[in-house]
Amino acid sequence: MRLIVACPACNRQYDASCYPVGSRFWCHCGAVCNVEQPPAHEAAVVRCSGCGAPRGDGPDCRHCGSSFARYELDLSSICPHCTTRVSDAARFCHSCGLALAAEGSAGELSPYVCPSCDGGQHMHSRALGKDLSLLECSRCAGVWLGRQTFDHVIRRAEEMLTQLPTQAGATPGGDRTVAQAKAVRYRPCPECKALMNRSQYGKFSRVIVDSCKEHGVWLDEGELTQILEWVRSGGLERARAAQHEQRKAELRQAEQSSRYSQARESWSGGDHNTSLGSASLLMRLLG
Image 1: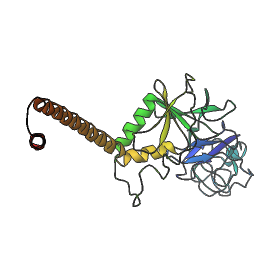
Image 2: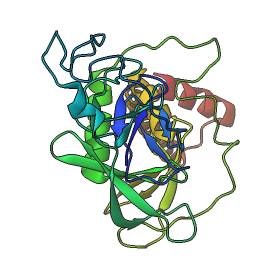
Image 3: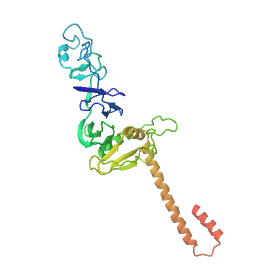
């Protein structure tokens, strides 16, 4: 039976037939969709499954000409709104009239195991456009993004750079701080099985990510959304500026230290008064 799941945030629909009841997956809007066992039931055909118009007395729809009998014989899908059994070919629920437009499968089972869950939990593959995809765990809702995919997602977020409204004192990227993170746990890369490094993304995002230098990045539930919000609010841009200023300060410090050492050497062999020498040295450094 085809199980259509609607996103609780944006109402986008997915064919979640390949997911077990109780599992979860990510919607394109960033919300988590839960796969639940619907209390399916049959209902009288009160609307045309082809166009959604109210049913008339005849055997065919007077609006689009579809045969009501055609849809009544095939009831192997479930409406995500009223849980009525509907036809796989239906474009509208014949009971509540909801438009049925599942955007393909919610994901296909992959050979890769979730690095966070125990028991060999395999992840599902989700397409991101034409050439990219990610892996997600239906148990913990974590996601695995290959290097190319992660870089592409970050670039897209930077292209949509805006100043998001935040509360006073709030940090873009969520309320979760590094100090509030869970106990340190090093996880294996889903591809090479080597333990991944843990680091704070962008140094200022307050989100700790697990990354394999060769293959990709693992993000726990909610972390991808936090990072993208931080990037879109200008966080990555500010981080680059801060790192640039830090590098400039380090170069100035190194230059000042070099000038101080050279000045001390130039005064080390003379019979100058100590206080006078120190004052003159200070004037030279400040000049």
